[in-house]
Length: 226
Ligand code: ADP
Image 1 (cartoon, rainbow, N blue to C red):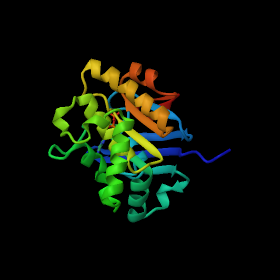
Image 2 (image 1 turned 60 degrees about the vertical axis):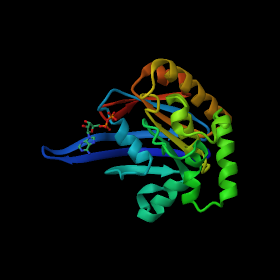
Image 3 (image 1 turned 30 degrees about the vertical axis):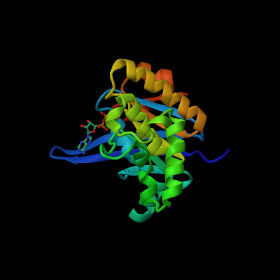
Image 4 (image 1 turned 90 degrees about the horizontal axis):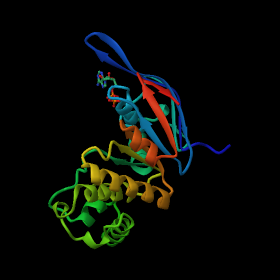
């Protein structure tokens, strides 16, 4: 069997609180193969964000193992972890976090500036990604010229511009109104199919999870229940 893109074994995370140690994740097991689209669903407080922070290498587990693209995350020092994060992962959060005075194209190209890519290639790659999310004609516009749903698609283009192996989406639709939510989730599904990128999508909305993903993991009290 080929190596999974994401493999999690007995992953646990406890927080120190005034009342003692609080186990937010209690031994989660998960495998995500290349090109799969997985939704993680659960009510507020079930450990979704805690789990996403671990998957995104933004925090370290208290127990268990996490292999990302074959690399054992627990064995990496801070610099190696930052490199892995920058090369392997694309993030999209609830807020779009676009810079208001920069054109959409420059917003999308931003990760490439940090990666030291030359200007002409940055422009070409950012434009290609904007076309991929259906917004090529707005490349030179500022973020306030487009809708919230379109801004979220720009954030997805920005997350993909570095050609990550995994796309992590943390409640990306919850700042949108009902109509845009439906539209944008269809768009996300289309973009995921076209790019074939391995995707993990977090939501508290059951209908959203069922309509968009290949597979759903339900979280409850820090444990996954298939
Ligand atoms: P979800 O994203 O599903 O709402 P979280 O991962 O944010 O769940 O939280 C899971 C549990 O862990 C909750 O009970 C929350 O109060 C607790 N928790 C989260 N972060 C911390 C923290 N930094 N310190 C203490 N407890 C935390």
